[in-house]
Image (tube, rainbow, N blue to C red; front, side, top):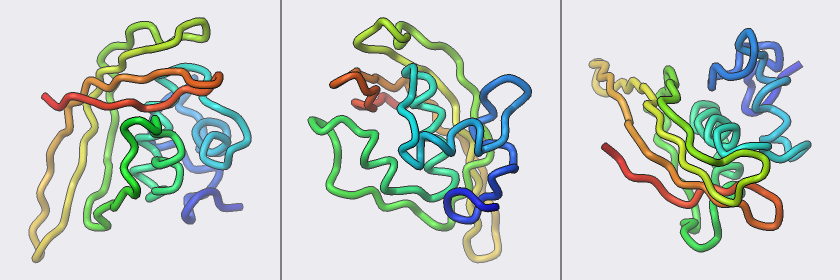
Length: 141
């Protein structure tokens, strides 16, 4: 059985979250499919990282706050997201209306036979709207 974009439902979720690093089908898969919303800002951030990793542009748009959302998200097929480390979370819990998550996302990219690697360090802001967590914006450092 396959999940989003050919990722096997039993494959370890790219976000690395959950106890014992859950399978995609038990972690971010249900959020991508619309079966349930993210319960916290950090869970939404992890699901958005996974959406980048599996190429789910539609989920990225749906989970972006309408005030700051672009019309579309164009993912670079040459970029592979290779790991995520959450550095801190502030607020963003089940009883909060906003939250902040700081993380480092690692990537690699092949171009003309050469491979480059790098990291994206971001402090992301989230807000809850109509009971759903949404990504507002982020500062890169």
